[in-house]
Length: 171
Image 1 (cartoon, rainbow, N blue to C red):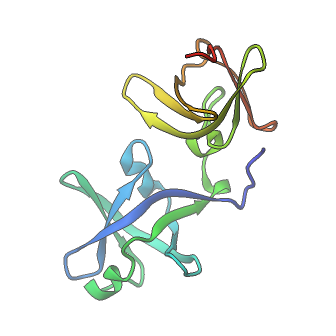
Image 2 (image 1 turned 45 degrees about the vertical axis):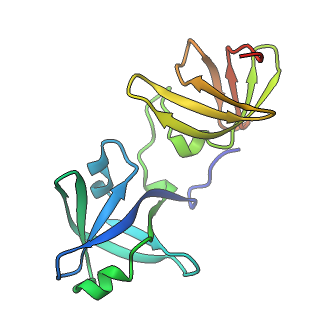
């Protein structure tokens, strides 16, 4: 289940407009949230439309949110037209994760089995809790499994699409 280099990775979403000169408010899924500004070429994907490239001119924190200026977006109406668009980049633009680290989008969809080979389902989502991330595993029922390598997560094999956990199927 390897991920292709041309796969689009969602970094965030345009959630509002800022001012009258075309700046947009952005919700970021990167950690830290300002990392979304590390990528200068954004592809904005709106429902029912083809992805369109936009060059990030500048981005900054504004209160609790983020604001960005994009090349060619120079007034409030143009910014408003981007509302709801997902901010994506091609997978190959991401830096390689360190050994033992994974991007969430690479974990979603992996089959989850315990050490005895019992299938627990698939990774549907992850939850950030502060202490550690938690896998949301959907199978015959939903399970929340802490993503703690070496303790609960014993093996991650992206190529095979498999995540092995030390987890009792009754839990």
